[in-house]
Length: 309
Ligand code: G3H
Ligand code: 13P
Ligand code: ZN
Image (cartoon, rainbow, N blue to C red):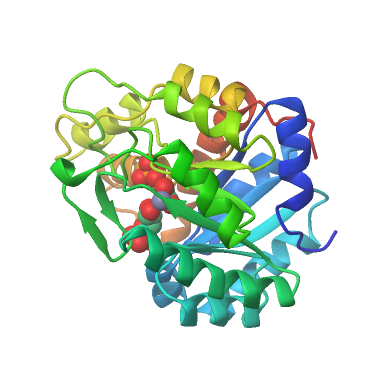
């Protein structure tokens, strides 16, 4: 199979009410863990790289590693730019062979976001590449964007309709109460499903994207803390809410933090229990397995995309 855009996978997911997992990639072990899980579940999958991931791993390496994943598996795989900060970064990724890009204009005012998104859409569509845009601010830390919690605002459904009509973006990320990172809620977890329903009612054919959707899996946090970590009070979006989001019209669910926790928990535990080991393969094998297990659980039990490849 070759790299695909998200067009067909979203069409099917909207018709059948499930979500596709979009997992952040930074290195080979993470890519392999994600792709092995998706292959075993016969699920489509989106591999996404942020601009800091691209700086870290280098675009040529990321592209070639994803190509290797595509060549050695039999599932639809999309390679997506996560939180593209500007036109130039989107263009660089499109020219490098990504099949999907996100332009994140959420840090700008409405008109500026519309203008920037239109510019990216025009270039991307001329090359057959799809575009995710964002309207509404997530609380927490985004790639190169720091939005204070008290500045967080939800997406306005009427504005979302106007935004999609004017920009012709292919999918839209909305703010309904999630945030990036390991500290999503101070009290009880709560999402504005009413906003999601309104957006979906006004935009029935637009795939909706949920950022900041890690569960912040308690056992992983516990393992990190047990073996020398210091991540107190971390809290994410419970699985049941993510399942409901998929059933209510979210087509793409973004996960990065849970993969970071899975890898770090595994490495911390291994090194603490095997202090004389210094062969990186010894701890990267269980770390890759931890990524695989985490992704497989999400695909199978939460996003419900097993067997949809
Ligand atoms: O939404 C942000 C993603 O988790 C990527 O984070 O910029 O640290 O790679 P990063
Ligand atoms: P998490 O921090 O909840 O994993 O969100 C990741 C994300 O939204 C990437 O764009
Ligand atoms: Zn995000």
